[in-house]
Image (cartoon, rainbow, N blue to C red; front, side, top):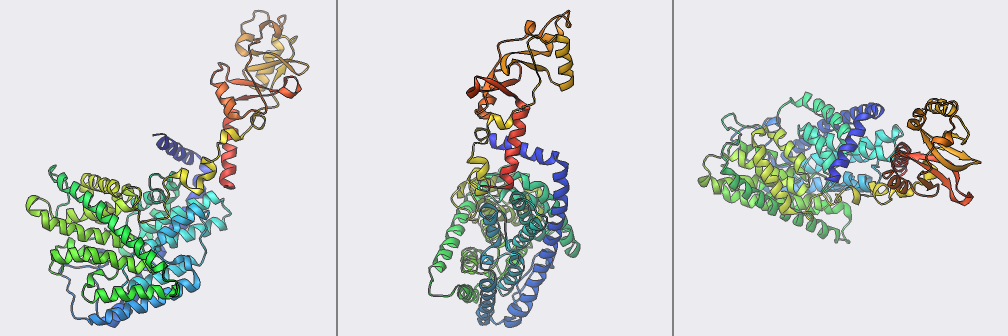
Length: 599
């Protein structure tokens, strides 16, 4: 609860600062433009490579999603299956050369690299990364590699966010926020899910926390990115749902099935994570094989498998679309089960070997194969549910659990499919999957548990800020004071002039007492009465070398709201005063300093 309160306060502070909003409007807009254009460029680059490499060599044209023109009753047609390994190996060789020659950190799935940059590199991403990632990912996916385009798009936009922060001379803190908003804008654009993308930028960095400060710039950049991408492809859902299929929740008893879906999705997610990182570890042990050749090895194995199971090639969106169209002639139950396992292996080989691409799209596809299988098996017991509903819930809960971003992935799922009527089943299944997979199993290894565990926030959590600031650094040294013989009328004028409610009474610099506005006002003869006659001698004091944490503790016991600061080394010489506002100002100065110069 305290973390939620802290996050809400942080969001409030961001909203209250007009200059901050102005800055993030500019930065968010620039990032959104690049996110949208980058998503368009990657989309057409993948299409180009697919046409001239995979389809050009083999004759095989994978099905596509509704937004790309996917139609019912897709047919495999005639193609040279034994040439598939040729296409995938060429893609692996080209991708491996480009990545390891120009930017080795562009290997694998880009989202994880961006998360790592946030936590460990102050949000710094080399300027060549976006271009290298775009080209390498287009080749990997277009040649038939089992990978997604969301990771590369996220890294492209995140890299530009880092670049914009450097150009505008922003702090390390702001560079991290700009980079995080790039993640959200990139994913939100390519998935046509601006709200989910914006939320994802705050949730995907941690396994059990949020980066609330990234929300405002992410919303701005996601809106811009989505608008640009949608201007080319239309403002539609990523997947087409036949009008005959009603997407809704109207049978409470179906929650039994969706609970089963959540359990199976969580277990399937664990399998995905284990196989993925086990494969990555296996390739990392191939020390005798040059790194730039390893993606070709993974691609060769994927190509050989695809001779018999072509459903594993590429993004996989088209097969999800065919499930939604209920065109299951190429996807009977036994094929769905086989492809579920083989798609996990293919994705692990493609990306784990060093190929460039994301894990989000394959995760959705794997989840969709699981969902269709569950529907076929359990449909006799739940005849009122259609395959579209069960598939949507399964694919979202599958990836929502292992991404450790259940809320944003749930929102994205409804935006991609239009399945807004499935919120309750999605909530149940996704949260169940999240808890079944646990904190240990995440597809994003660079995630940390929470803000306190992030090196990016080490300065805020590892240093007790209130204990680090001395009273002397926070006090007011120009405090109003008077001698004991000062008349009340003179003291009253001093209070009005200094806009305060209390005056410290001193003699030769040493404390005698304190007089308040109420005490001055209570006298009938202010010109003849002296301060010493009405002052209070019960004054709370604190040494200048104490911390403001100690001062705060003392102030909570005081009814005046102010402490007199003394120098104990000089016989309790009065050197200033300190109140709640002074402590707050000192704390905020220190936080700004830590953000600008993190430990």
